[in-house]
Length: 185
Ligand code: PAN
Ligand code: ZN
Image (cartoon, rainbow, N blue to C red; front, side, top):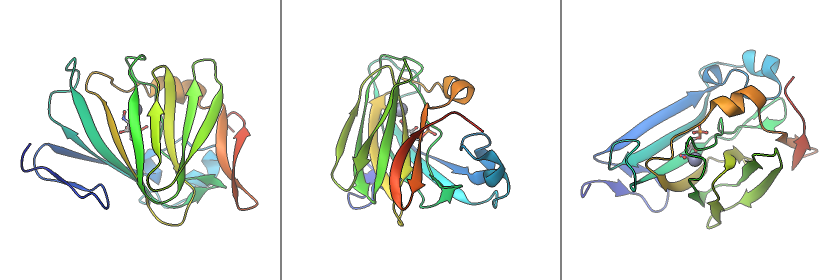
């Protein structure tokens, strides 16, 4: 733990206990509204990377995890590059996000399907309450770097999102991020 460092300018984590993951266009089948556009893109293009510092085993009650997400700039058929999004498996678990660098949006959806977003810019702080699905979108031209802290027993429920999706999508409409109500293609 003591040899783990966070670069406060970029959020980059180095040292012990750091777990790295990466999602490319090829990994994100059926995540974007325009699946046919995604399928025609280079599958090796990186959409986002996540680093997390896991000081205790996943599922430990009472612990915390700390991480940095980097969402690259880009779009799929006018929809901004974004994370898959999830509810926490333990739905009551909340999370903090804060924006380190870049411009983007935190897209939120409650269990009734109400969807909204909070704009992100360096220094914005975002409290994600329990029972709220969350995903990050990069609306700018540079990487969006976001710090996060969440309970070590929160877990991730991706299945509910892949079954019914978010009820709205953040699209580039005439150059402006616009939350457009819709389902999948
Ligand atoms: C974040 C997310 C991270 C990647 O650490 O896991 O931004 O998004 P997906 O997990 O939806 O792919 C977090 O919210 N943890 O709970
Ligand atoms: Zn989360």
